[in-house]
Image (cartoon, rainbow, N blue to C red):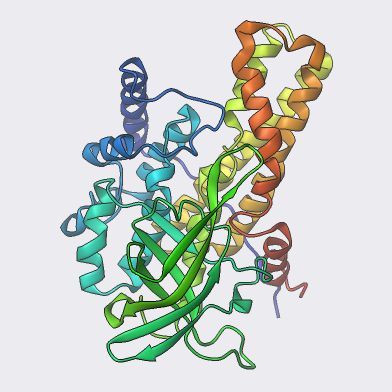
Length: 385
């Protein structure tokens, strides 16, 4: 019996994607000149509803979806180019990110026609902010250990439980919520369902969790006698686990998994200047080589998704490597630019970016799946578990 494997076939972007890249760069330059956004230390992970609507109006949200749902029927590779340019520019993408990246594709594959008609046009227009209700207290990244439960009642379900580390739940209109609809049995993956929850519903309490940078991004969300109608169950009751493969592939392979600290990399190169010494050249050259490698691996996964594949293992590899890369950048940056060289007011942006990314770096190990979970997935694919 052959050992399962994975691959990253090289992808050559079509001419249409290259033209689109130029178009996006021109748009971003014009938006910055008009003052519609300013790159900052937090990079792309800022919420700006108006900017999200601008992207929707340009046709750059829901790009690959059918036109009847507000999409534009473009290719996954064209979408990849748009996303990459937005991330590199530090454009504020967080407001529409989970909706466009995860919930939209999920509903196209598993959602009802009513759910598609209700949510997809709003997402494609940049008007729908989505939270993902996965993690719970005491369960870490073990999704099968969730205890938030839903009990069947007339016309729907009553939900009781808690979620934690729920990004942007305090601003979301909708949460994609994982719950237990059957008691946990021998098969831990059975009996888990996914609901679409209107965050204005009674029975929801959102408590802020302030991170080390002083930002309110995470939340604890408490569900107390929350009613969810039957028509808000995504796919089959008890079938959420079978939906997870592509969901995680979309989440873990996107360029945000290795461009979180890109602003700091650019600021470090600028701060070091045009005449780096040997040690600086080696360190920056290594980071840029890793950047090139991760870009090509991520682009390969975009090609797999375009072909209808489910590259969950490849996505786990990119996420694991991207995590380490993003955590290396601030550590290397502060070594290349020692503290006594950081007082120049002309390089204040470097200081701000370094501080933000040093404080935020631990989070990249957790979000999108911990390193341990990712490596378990990879080990199983290699037949090592």
